[in-house]
Image (cartoon, rainbow, N blue to C red):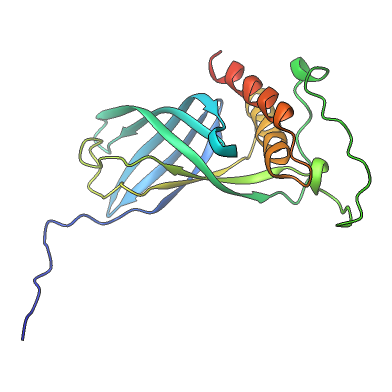
Length: 196
């Protein structure tokens, strides 16, 4: 009979954390035992290789004792979205003319209901982070397969503008009639906000 000893040094694997927008950033908490670690993802660029939104930026983690550590060039790849039960935020003023999406022609495939298609918006973005080293960030957990669940609850103009752009980009890339040019325009607008 063979028995396998449990590895006492194995770290707890963390799979996902909830984050909210804070300006251009996403903030949340990592709860490990009695410790609470402040988590910040600050995207500084957006791209859409292979038709998927990828945000690239820095991760900062602040330990309960106040020590902060950071890692640069972290990617967050959009895996999925959850639609909102309300309409989208208003279109960003500075992009109102240049980014106005064309109204779609009537389609016979699906009935248009409230808050679907171009009238809808994204409520949550599920983003897979590139592998992180928990120990390097001062977190006693395995962060090698971490997903952030970004609830787009907008309370400022920057957050509303990004919320509208993330929603419009999702429709342009994955809607009933994908539009590569419009998606590229939205990516450009997102980058202008992230780099401001």
